[in-house]
Length: 437
Image 1: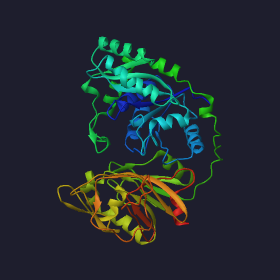
Image 2 (image 1 turned 120 degrees about the horizontal axis):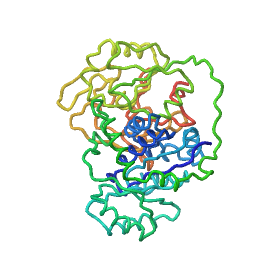
Image 3 (image 1 turned 45 degrees about the vertical axis):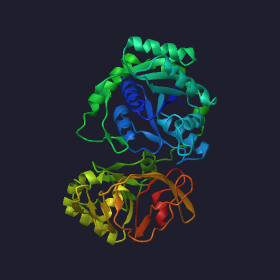
Image 4 (image 1 turned 90 degrees about the vertical axis):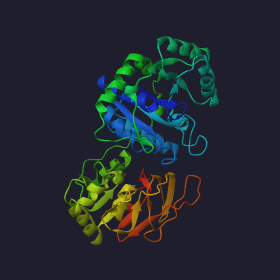
């Protein structure tokens, strides 16, 4: 096992600077030619895309709701970290914030995987008073190891010295700071980061790495976060000899459709040959045995998607002829009769689902989801602002939230087309192909 160091970057709250620090560290380690494995706590689809840009390697989600069994979670971590020297895990929200108290929190993940926490806290306009919240984070959970703290939005070297004194006074090691810098600001879209293809990510990533190299003690972080052998001692599944894969899965991937979990891609690629295509730019669906339409931002590309008549016709014919389709959230919206954007313009879509998706009077719907089909439990996450003008039929399953309460979310089947708002995490024991067995 080559992994040497690993840690969770936990924030005092959302907006503490977790993402900026994570991206800076990932790019700095990449520039040092360190093999790094990036992770994101929680169900977020967007941050992992930027992690991948920073580290030039896939980012995996770590989520205790998706993988509630600790041994399976540890096995997933060991498998995906096997080729890395450093594991960098970006937390979610505040350190102890979960879907039910601290369930599903960054702190719970750190404890399950035996990882220390590097805390980042916003230090704007505060000095010794920072000791009070730091003391709380240090002592709130005695089973959690806080390896050190990094201060965000620090005003000067002198300001940092005052913060260091406060941290050391309650027994937390200061590991550096991120200065106030407008060049590190990242614009928002929905809950996550913008994935605007015109945004200059390389400039931001390299600038963040420069700041981290200059103001954060990376070597100290790596040395104080050496992984215990038990964190990576779980048996790694041996890869079987490559076999010719007869099944072909077409996956939509372009500006409009790119919300996929890397573990899902791994699962599909272990069972089938993957062919990527673009509903925006390509003229027709490639030959395939299964079509996966993931989520994304089709509402921002509604005109382009609608204008590509040959692609819409190709997918509609595939569905009409019994083709197997899994469409989630944005992918489902593409299969409706029309997508109505915020300006109330109706853009014709593939017309497979007898309903329209609309962004008018938008309202955020968010949360973990679980459902049971043929005795098998599937878990996932829902996050969207659109809604359907009406249900395209009776839902084939009741979909529950994280507390077991039924939701209004549906899953619909028309011929061999499954469509719904829930992004399913397939995990070890399920796959999209099982739905058609």
